[in-house]
Length: 206
Image (cartoon, rainbow, N blue to C red; front, side, top):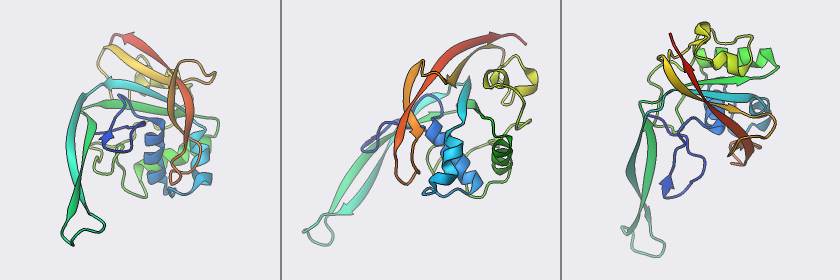
């Protein structure tokens, strides 16, 4: 189970259909021991280019949760009940790549995913990974499209089956679809800016 919400914060909690950049960087910060109030630690990661290969799109699920809180001015045992609807992806598999010029930063990130400082989760704290979140080789000398390509067998990672896969790569020239999941301040401040992604479908045979 995983959830990558970027729009809602109140009674209905959404999920995007692939990992958000804010969610991926949050997972990476947990692995590296970067506090949610530490913008200086997060900023170099936020500058990396991100790509996602959808090896298995998963199934959209939802549930509802309730929470209670005291009603001000009412008797001690008077409670207000809040209901929230939450959406998730079940059985989805993604290969996520981050690209940049700072090889040392990428190496440190890869080592942290293999030996994380804090527990990791897939978008929400209740959603822990069911498999390791790193692949071998961890860091490669290739551009993002080549590293994610299903045809590049040495980079298969999660091992997608032959056929057509969807790939979403962050655009450097502001072309494509708008996403509002680019951290522009620490996670404690909850401020996100725009980035653009381009989606393509890659077909390959074994």
